[in-house]
Image (cartoon, rainbow, N blue to C red; front, side, top):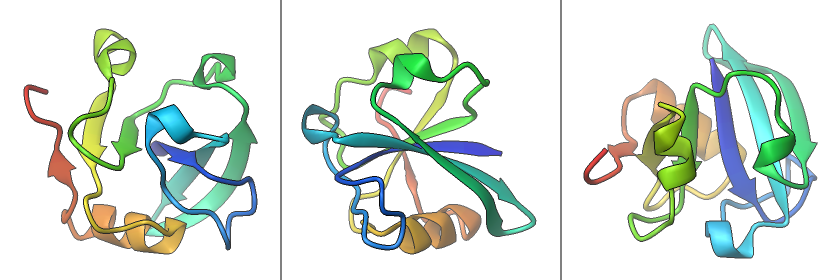
Length: 101
């Protein structure tokens, strides 16, 4: 499963989820069996050549149509900001579906 997150830095342990308008780096996480097994970062999401399963955004006011047009699921992490918290919330199905998704 590949999760894409708009983050404020490329340092995975210190990174926080931010609005797409404020993104500094896009974090691409490969999650297998409940663990992040691979992490990479990109300056733009257009650079990513792999199929993205899910984009996690910080709120339901984000401009996510480019992802929806590509049939990428969009989830909202209203409270989670760290990578660990977001992955845990994803695994426990605590992230919300994007409205109108």
